[in-house]
Image (cartoon, rainbow, N blue to C red):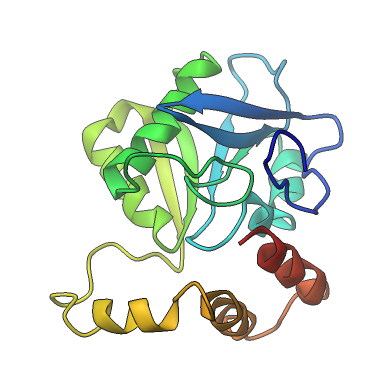
Length: 197
């Protein structure tokens, strides 16, 4: 623990990259940058994980993108991973604006290729609609783009499923079942998610 904050127990994605905790509102957004000194002409791959996951969900893809010549930025969503938990809201619109805030902090004005998983894909579409000059393409990985039908079927059970007392083990059990072919490090990775929740 450092400054009353639990940091996830996974290695950084990029050995020679930078880890940043950017002040946003009354909290922080954590991200890694594979090449902070890259030239302005270097293409950018911006990676957003799904809800309940970390930037480390890109631990296999990020090195491939880096090797292909991209400057890779992998961000934790509000309330997850190493990002802070004291935001006033956690809406799709606010998460989308976090991407703009990170890019502005790095003085990146060129359009980026956005990789987005699950809920983050909706953030990407929102971002592209409101700031089209900032997004070159969106790569959706299992993306959700709209609310479930009227939420009346899903929202009530979420309070039961993700109650503080048993929500953590329920999420970890569900998470482990998401993979048709689980990664070899799934036990370690799931333990890190559990530790951070």
